[in-house]
Amino acid sequence: MLEQLKQTAINRQQLITTWAEDNPYMGYNPTEKEIQYFYRHDPWLTVRKRVLERDNYIDQYELVENDRIIPGNTVHHIIPLRERWDLRADIRNLEVISRANHNREHPERNGGSVVRERYEAKKRNAKRVLTVKTKVNDELL
Image: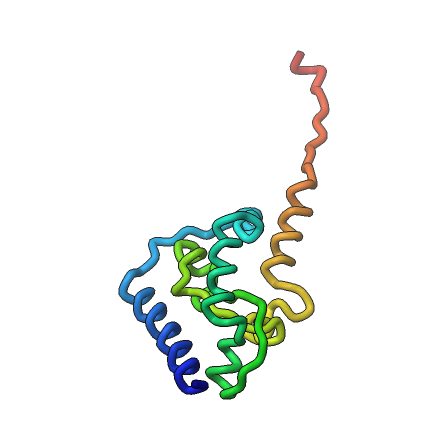
């Protein structure tokens, strides 16, 4: 049974990777706000639940890499969301992994996301209003 589960996970990863290579993405870079909105609304919540049930809450990363069955409760995009926005709710691009393995898959999340830090810095800078002081030249009036 373990080998069958492992082979299913490997096949899923190969299938979506091959499909993505054959169907190049024309590109759309979502904003952080769009990403957060997506994760909090129905299309994601529905597909997330389906993926958890499909994978029986088993960490697919641990299954493939270490031949171990451990619980997982994080739904992970095989091809990252920021790279392929069009696959954000595609069940073929999703797998269940544990929080610890999700952090390994996304090292930028350890100690804070690089993307999040850039977003926050951009947001802080957007609040700053640059002003230029001018003086009226009385001689020209």
